[in-house]
Image (cartoon, rainbow, N blue to C red; front, top):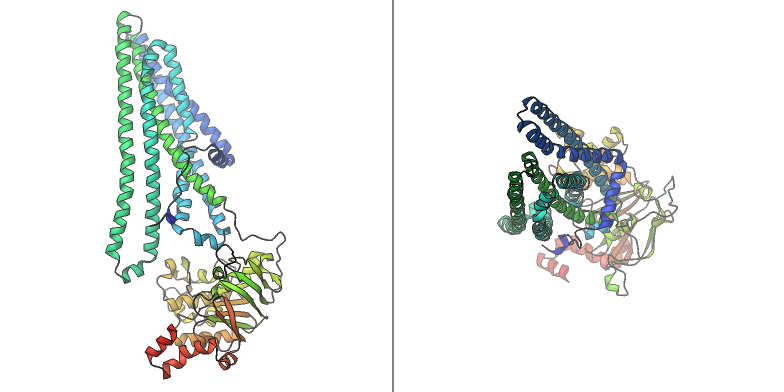
Length: 607
């Protein structure tokens, strides 16, 4: 595993700008937050009532044998507990509901932003990391809203209220209680630093686990084919062990911190009993006040411990929010023109004019350019094929036309309008791309043909018949309503390609692009598809990428690419007559099978 899959470490445990930006998500829910804040204040006040009622019960009634008055105090104590239950229930319910709505808003915002980012962004960022943004990181931010940023005020109010009551009851005894606070701050500071570092380490190993799982589960067929199961289990065990060790480090700090707080609380109670008990014996302090002090002391440490826990929640939220906002602040590089063109009628003329393109930063080194001085045009209703060795730049031409990337030099146009000046939705709705590696979504066969468009059942079935997919679809258990498993796992590669043909044709594009679209179809099916394409391409512009030259012999023009340049162009017969690159490709693919031994063919391929 490499750092490519890891999150960047958080520079600061607290960032006021990040926190203020997070708080903007509370604005639509100001009333709910205000109600929760009010309930927290009421809850803090109710927490102060119980010990004081205990003092009254002991000093005014138990000490004087007043059973009737004691009953009244007990009833009041019970009412306080019931009120505290109702207030706490309302506060927790409102906060959790608000937190869920904020998560809904944030996830919707992140996913919408991911839809706007260009394809190149996904080339640079692993899927596991982006999934973590939408899931784990949003959960961490939600924890801040539901258990941190608002409830911390309740802890502060409770803490200040208890301190005020204790000072009012007996300021000397209160100071004795507070004598252990310096030790508490020492322990808390140690815990905060250690827990923060262990938290960061845990997050790093979580990122590695996510990346490892994503890669190996997606490529499970390759793992099993090359018998890497045991190696992968061992590799995952090593990563998982590192993650467990990081968690154990965090557990160590928690295991020390909370018992230490309990010990300090016990020491405080011991000091109260030692000093306060002496005052009771001398008659300068009532027994009820002493018992109330003990109860207040126990409640005094609870919000302090909670504040320490809130720091960890804040730390997690800061780390997650930094990564979320880094994603949200990433500006899409494929943006609409100020006044995008959206013609109602698209003729389908495609043109590349002196196009140079690279996936890296442009430089004077020609070796970095994927496409070099590409210049050709496809008239409406005509077809052109792109052939050449792997890496010649064929698929890059398609990507530029679809505007998955933008050119660095030259122009790519549709109907004479630069694709950068088109409305992106209108541009892509005029094009249909059929890839070699077909991606199917969870849903039905019909929904995978429609892809959310308003296409009737008749058009779906007509498109399927045209590409001869109707027969195998009807043979499925529920026909067009058959559920498609993840990535189309229950369908063959050939069946998925037939569905992708039906998908493209059902949308009735002006320009049809085929990228090795028949490479996984058997010979019989390929013949049927070729018959269908002859009819379907009559009124459409077609761009075909193919290694199997039998599929492109009837196109209007063939462009032969080599190392990012167009080296030859012409019809099938014209290129064969030139006896150049295309002729050699044709010889290697067909003629060698008949007259050249296999070894010679391999040598020729290597040459």
